[in-house]
Length: 274
Image 1 (cartoon, one colour):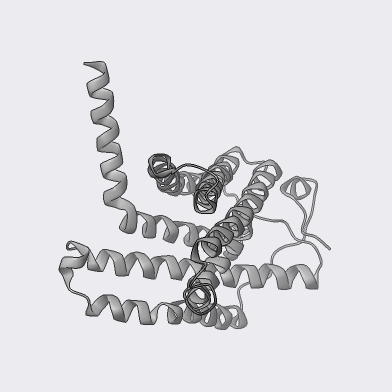
Image 2 (tube, helix red, strand yellow):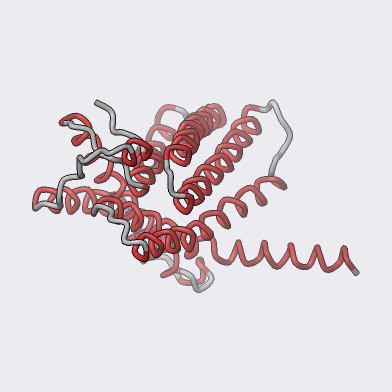
């Protein structure tokens, strides 16, 4: 039985999400531990590299990667819990944080699997056809991102609170932006289009800025929930934590790039107006 939308909550659904239990904590520890274990070799390699390679931002790189994979572990946990509850029934109301996990969770899971498997598969089986392999990989990325973006649109339409509609709408837009990025890279690698490097910079900047803007939007929506005494379950708040960790990772990893983009934009506007 599928979980009801937010409209069904207002219609009088009295089913509540299960309380946090010891089994939930054990599962969360397992998923987060597995996620962090996947990047342990990468962290060790980074620590052995000289600081000059990272231009003094080695620890920013490490902290950004850790934040990203902490978020992946939480999203994996959320997907497992939501799937288990859906299989068990009865139906329960989907909170905005649940939608965040349902929209971003599959992407995080695929990215983790992709990071682990792609280097081995590419090196051993597609070393002579790496362009075709990378193009196919970008097509898969674009398809998954497009599907998740459409789920994000569905989530925004299913949510009655305007504040959470805005948050879910921002998430959907940044996923459409990433879809465009991966589709452009697939076209470029396949040899059927010209280089999109100029547009790529602006697409990535748009994605990063939207993600940074999503954090205060979520914080404001959660604050209004508290002010209006709107009760949410524990998994909702855990989904919000995952989204905040994503923003932390992006700021640490892409902060200088985004700052330079804004500086270039300001210079361009200033020169155009003068």
